[in-house]
Image (cartoon, rainbow, N blue to C red; front, side, top):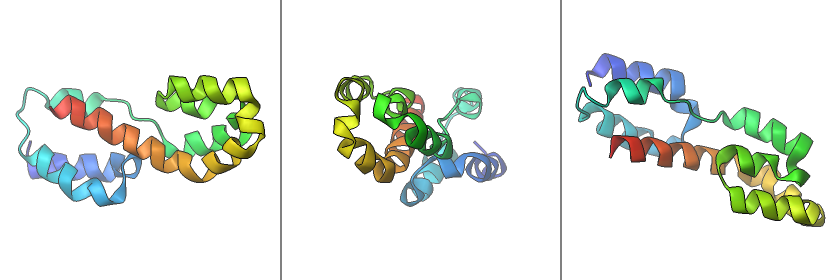
Amino acid sequence: MDAEKVNLFIATKGDNFPAESIPMIRERLMNLSSNNEMAIMAMDYTNPVLTIILSVLFGELGIDRFIIGDIGLGIGKLLTGGGCGIWWLIDLFLIMDATKKKNLEKLMMTIG
């Protein structure tokens, strides 16, 4: 992938990944073959801001965990009412980072 496309990807989708992983993502994308280029650019990543909003509104139901793909944790939160509110409160601080890490995992799986 050429540098211009990598910079465009980082500028438009960089907020969806942990800040400390941006240099590694840039390096991996620069070495990416053109076969995977379209898949990477078209991939849909979960917005961390949307996840925190859903966590505030519906976190006790586990919706935030279902959105990022943590089905088991989502079921656990749903059955326990967000851990009687404690788990929900803790997730308010952790869900944005969890969303960014899940997005990074999805990107790395696609890159290979």
